[in-house]
Image (cartoon, rainbow, N blue to C red; front, side, top):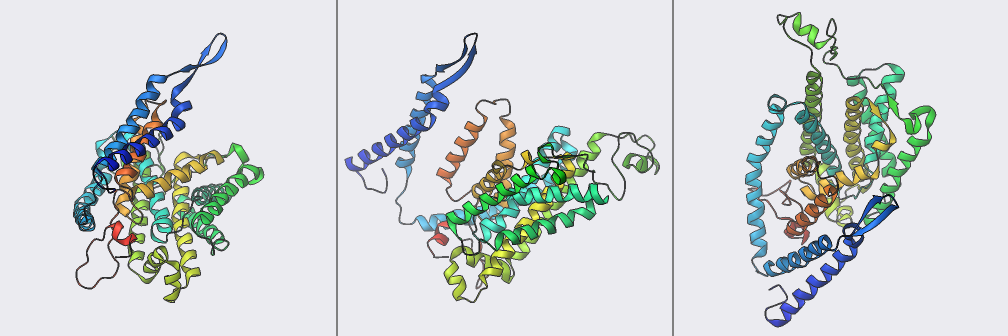
Length: 437
């Protein structure tokens, strides 16, 4: 039945475990699913829904029982994990180019809604890759990553409106300012690890949000900033009116007089902008992993004490991870500001940090392909259940729990060593966690 052994004791232990899981589900979902509020002439009343609650509790009980029944105690498990990791690596060689080809051709095969959804997914892909540097490579748990996202957005909005600078000028400045804030966060948390680091970074994210709300004279406070300039293509604006200085006017004056202005042109241009920024993030991250700095991040993630004993400067290693990860978050924030043309503190809540962190963990810590797949599943999956507003987050949470039960280390959990003697072999996450990689 399970690793505990065979026979009646194992069966009793499995049923006891499943019963405890069902009781926990009853406590968690008793009020959320067992009761429903309904407006009546006499006021709001609570209506019981015992059938739905019973179905969910029974599903948890039998699901846990099934999980325990198929759990293997095979001593060759490590070899099986290695084979699985190798298979995922070979599959990734085909999946990654296929996803890239799909991303490049997406505006030509879908409509306006599909392009907007692609922009949203790519934004979270870029945020996930940026946070993956801090969490996946350096092993520093950051719950306030949305703060750098907000710094980039507000930096671009204030620079563009105050000094009249364009998007392409403000974009690197927003990234640099966000990186500086990353260094400022890194200094106070140099000696913190684990839960303590998570609490401090969470507080940092909330501090930034409170500052944005209360600095009314600078940030507009709760009202936010509107009228943020849109990006241009070599000085050409995307305007429905057409004419000189616009993309449609330029095309019309160069041999295509029948070309008409369309709002889809601007959306497609924004799509390729965020696609380029995401690919830049991926390219820089992959290059950094192969140099001494990237290997220092991975050493810090595995064992900080051993990292110090090797002569690695832990202070510089942590600060660079925070700074580079924050810089990419700032670039994503600047794009968010120019795409929406309006920002407010409500766009940068802890829920955004939680989503990005969930993407990194679900995809697999340190895996670039895994983060991209997780963002596609999570963000695209939420849109697929938009019609089920009452159960949208419940379905999403259930899917997350199921995925983490089946793949507790993420969708793509294997790791390829940066340096190897001879041929590189994919190492399963279980072996790395055991110190055997």
